[in-house]
Length: 256
Length: 243
Image (cartoon, each protein chain N blue to C red):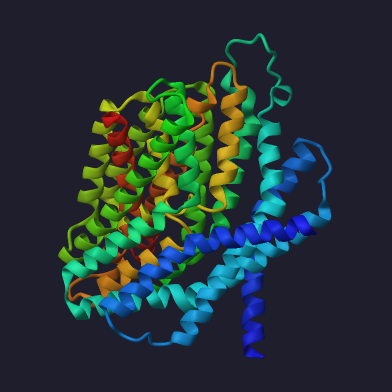
């Protein structure tokens, strides 16, 4: 119980340290530069406290429940015993790891659905588009992108192929899609790449990358463990544009 | 009473958001690893905290962060001073990134890689200075990204030209940068945007695009986050080349 309390206080101070500079900048500019009173000071204050408390509880709960189990699982699924790697093996076939790919994809999908910053962006996109972009459609499109990204990223670690070839191929696909995607979705699609990897996704995905790169023969965790986050921020751009193209194509077909 | 019902609905939403992750972890634990779930009680309490926290966060978002970001955008537009707006944009990008825990962690790991790779001396002091340098590099690059993004909204430049130029920058830097830094640089783009920054910056962009005549909030309002996740990649590789 005492441990829990100390941990809670730690998370609280950590979040406060994270929030204070932001609050300082916001209120500094509001009162010193813009010199305008807040419209609903009471509401804003309550809202900020809710954001703070909410984040603390959220992180605390993740640390308590989902992270230890998820990280343990990532290391168990990538352990030599589970994968059947004997110590004297030099190279391994990539298709020995089907469970790893499945785990990578499903953990990518499910953590993205729970990612608070993605929820925030989809709420805003839904408001701004006047309801044309559905919150769930967008969230699922992004989550599928992350799932595919993390699975391919795991394959890259396992096969030991250079990261930049994948990322550059991804860029080419994104550029081609940009030419054909509806104009209104482009900026939002680019944004969805950046918002997916945050509080929930990064720790679990990092554990997966670390587990894979330290257990697969010939991989170095310091060099090969990175890159999964880059995949998770590139693939949603493609999936969101694909989602928009698909919706446009379907509504065109209906109108015809 | 209405407030209570509203809160209950929001709790249900958060519960639904959490269901997939609980299902995935449960499935792999029971069926693939074939192990019992340890500490079921703690797990349950933790999940309830996550649900409660997420629901509080989302409500606070609608009450404070969104209105604050948008009203500041309108106030800046009314004030009409571009310099102050750009200074605000830089401060917001730099200030929210420099203390970001995920970034601090990745910078420390990067310093270890640099030390083992022989790029810097293998002692605590040079590792610390390398990590700090990297952290400030990323923070400056995010500040720069928000400034560029705000300028873009004001001028109405199409987002894709800037992003594609950014991609070319990444490709160019990848060819020049030492191999050890590439993975970290690519990942640093994803970790910069924190849970509090994203809603604020999004509201700022949408607010600016709605307050300026001739801009469409859907086409012009989004895109700030995209810049913030692209420029750190270029700047971090630049840092790797210079050191």
